[in-house]
Image (cartoon, rainbow, N blue to C red; front, side, top):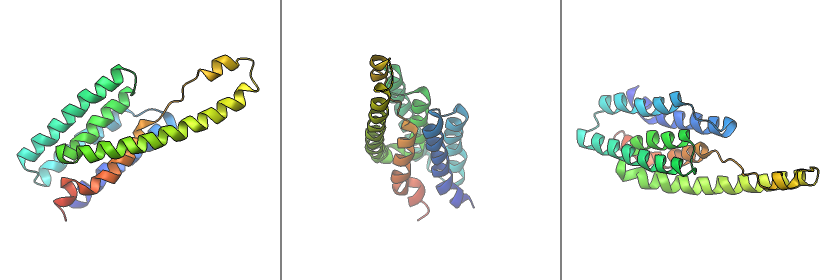
Length: 166
């Protein structure tokens, strides 16, 4: 049961975070906390070595700093920054690179789709609106949590969690 939980809880929580962000453009604090806190008991009961645990925690701290910096320059929302760190603890330094690379690819594809869709929608609105200049300056919001979920799910099979059970 613990083995199943250790390889399924994180992906399930990331799916919830991604879907929620895609629908509401918000990632609730309780969900980020659940993703982060679930790591600790599962690391303990699955026998994660202390050195590996420390490296996972270090990856989380580094991603929190990066997320905070991206939040401070208005690239991410606060929930996105917290989700980045919460997910990072599950990957550790050996898999954080693939997680980030896959997240960037998913985020780029998502941004492209959102921008194209927004431009089409704005174009239709501009032709019907007396406020065409204001509508043209609108900036679409991109649910990065969705990209984090995709990147996490694609990178997760190569993590310590899967290797320790395989």
